[in-house]
Amino acid sequence: METRETIQKELATIATNLSDLPKQTPYQAPEGYFSGLSETLISTAKESPSGKVRTLFVRLAVAACVAGLISLSIYIAIQGSHSEPMVKTEAAILSELDTLNQNDLIAYLEIHAQPGDMLTIEKNLENTYLSSSEQNEDILLSELLEDVSEQL
Amino acid sequence: MNTAGNTVHPEDTTLLEWFRQPETKDKSFTLLVKKYQEKLYWHIRRMVVTHENANDVLQNMFIKVWKGLENFREDSQLFTWLYRIATNESLSFLEQQKKKRVLSISPEGTDLSESIRADPYYDPHKLEWKLQLAIQSLPEKQRAVFNLRYYDEMPYQEMSKILNTSEGALKASYHHAVKKIEDFILNH
Image (cartoon, one colour):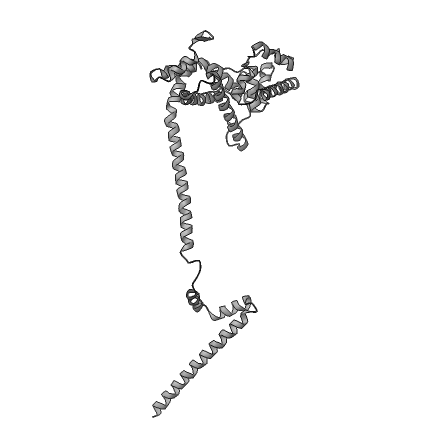
């Protein structure tokens, strides 16, 4: 085990100037500080466990609240996104298309239609004209027949 | 029994034995504080400089001792264990102060050299004050190494247990610290 002498010798070999200095700490403690310290420390130490537990409890409560808020916001976000189905059915799409203005549809198709889309559009248009001309003929025929029956 | 100054103190083993018995727990703790308070206070004070800081660190340190003493394993000396807590508490305190200084959110986070110069007993012409300024210029852990060796005249073996560092590394650190301090004193 090292002795005070060996420690002092070591210092002298590293820095002679320093080994010659008196090993005094220049700081001062307030008068009478040490005489009442043990009583102060024992009362502080005895009070500390409940304080620590309370601090821990408060921390845990805050952490639980934050975790709760985060979970709630995640739940609300998920619920919100699920309120409208992610994939729409064909019927839903068609019913939505019915509500659209025809001019808007044309304007959209002029901008976004692909060359391949033209065939589909033309086919649909032919069907539309066909059905509409048939309907018109029926209407005309019924009107004519009405006129005849009135004359008779 | 051993003596520190003129006071007779019980042996550490006796203090530990008394601490484990509820009826003598308080008495044992009071005696333990009385036995080590001055040495530990001055060790902490040299690290944190002001009395207010040293008092705070000492209180925190003894709260930890109160809580941990019952489970203290006697495979190391009580004195070494107390010094380890005191050193760790001081280093943690300095780390917090450093963070406060960086964030500049508190006037407490003033530089330690400024605190030395603000001491009512500070005398710039006295070598012991110059030595304190030189010590504060060292990194925190090296400061602890220097103080334990220079002021407490502690063997490297004990220091190794306190600072959890190899004896070789401590020896090198102390040599560097002494050289730096010598340079500081000669150039300031």
